[in-house]
Image (cartoon, rainbow, N blue to C red):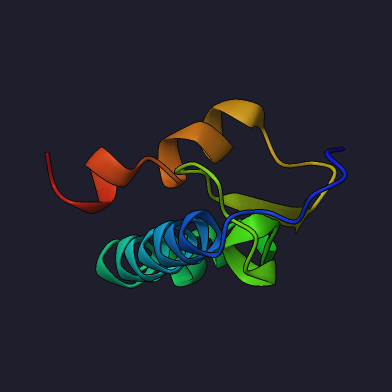
Length: 87
């Protein structure tokens, strides 16, 4: 870590980039209706940098607690965004 503080303009750029990534992540989650779709197979929660406000790249993280008897094929079929969009 450098001894001198970060350039204020660079820090402002980093914050602006994080805020833009956060807004885009919220838009994607809302437009694809991801949480209700994921909830079809279990208890779904969004977590990670898109929730904590520390995004540095486009990345969405979810955890889903599913019934142990759930077939993995069913999981991938029911949670496919292209399937949900009717593609």
